Each structure stands twice: as structure tokens, then as C-alpha cells.
Image (tube, rainbow, N blue to C red; front, side, top):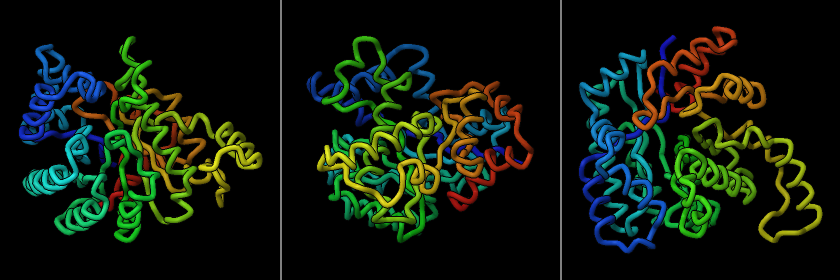
Length: 338
């Protein structure tokens, strides 16, 4: 058994320079979530400077940290909000450049790294083409950092991305982003917009919108991965099924029609979750119980959450060694074809 970490972040220096430029040039109200996230991490605080140092590095330091925690391989992808914060033409061009740069790091250490392709969802046809190119050069799927300037993938304009993922038989990883301007207001005053809560609320909403829109009925072989133990959704399975059935029967919402299956069925059949940032045995065991051990993958959330002793949580889970191997290794190998 080896340990594979399936949600690990990277940001090239060029991307961080572009983020600094946005922070300097855009008005404060342009994207409060982006300003809250990268205004901090590109600032002077020790935690921020350590993060920026680690997130750009794909050589000796990262490998040493992996060795320190017994991580054999990282699945790496572009950190949030990736290229999605830029206009569509710029985002498409940057996705291509950054994918080439990232696959170069993978090829330099092929036994230690694998990668997902960045895409520009606001140019769906170009995103599908870049995903196809990314797979050809060795990437294992795509990542979308949740909403793209306040828009979500359940809108049919974006469905060429799902079509490409299904046709190529590769997964789509929906990674968190800070809530968009229309949502973020109540989160900011108490610092709840980021990983503490806002990320999970926003990304769980995104996945739920995709399910309720009927995306999995249209693309039944589509596979989606999300982190942080499913962004809370596994704990809501009963209520999601009950209330969705009720609102469909009452014809209450035009955008929430009948589905072929229950919401919980799609979460059990089309969705995989990682343990990133959620190294808490009771929650991991619950997710393994309700979704099945073959749906849960280990992740560390490096470098945002680099706590070496947290590996012990999975090492000591009260599960069979066969299930532990599923979580640490086999599920990732199967989902991402590592």
C-alpha cells in the first residue's frame, strides 16, 4: 500500500504576479472573495509567505514534505481561482501555458506527481479542446475552481465540458472558490468566506445545482470529484432526497424538475470525495459508510493544510486493511487512471 494525495495545489509564479496586478488595479468591490483570499496570501503575514513559497515549488522542498509524511504521489492542479478570474481569451491562453508548465514538472518526477488540466469554463468549446489536449500530453482529468465569475456549470452553455469529460472518460474535479459577490456578503464580517465554511457552502451548492439540473441524466457516465468529504453533502442525503421529491411533486420551482434517480443515488454513483482538510475519523468513517469505501480518497490539501501528523488519522482508521488501501491508493488509481 502507498499513500496518494489527491487534492494538492500549485501556482506558477506568473499566475501569482497576475493576481498581484488584479489586486492593485481592480476596485475593492470587483470581487471581494478574491481580494479576501489572495489579498491575504500575497501579503506579509508569516502563514501567507510560507504558503506562497510552498505553492510555487515542485522540486526538492515539496518532495521532502511528501517524504516526511509518507506521501508517495500527489495529484496536483492549479489553485483557486485558477485562470477563471480572467477574461475568457486570456484564461484560455493561460490554461494552455500553465498545463504545459505543470506537465513538465510531472515528467521531471513521473513517479511522484500526476496532474489535472486547468480549463477556462467561460469559453466552453475551448475548454473542451484544452482538456482533450491535456489528456494527450499526460494529464488525468480537469479541474474547475467552482464558480466562474458567479456562474455555475449547471447552465447548459457549459455542458460541452461535461460532454468532453464523458467522451474522454476522465473525471472533473470541482475545487472550491470563495463565494461570488452575490453570495459573499454575510460571510465576510466574521471571516467565514474561505476554507472555514464559505468554500464548502459554495462548492456544495455548485455540485447540488449540477445534480438537480439533470446533468447526470444527460451524461450518465460523467464522474465528478470534490474535496473536503463532499463539501457537507453526504451528511444531508436523507433531507436532500426528501425535500427534492417534495418540491418536484409540488411543481414549486421551474428549474427543479423530476430526475431519473434520487439525489443520493447520483452522489453514490457519479461522485467521488476526498478527505482533503477533513482529517477527522468520525466524519471519514461516516462518508465511507453512506457512500461506500470505494468512493472516498485520501488527500492532504497541501500546501494550504500541511500538518504531517494528520496522516495518522487515516493510518489508524478503524477499517479493514483492504478498505484502507482503497482510500489511500486504489480509488485514486482507478478514478484518475494513475
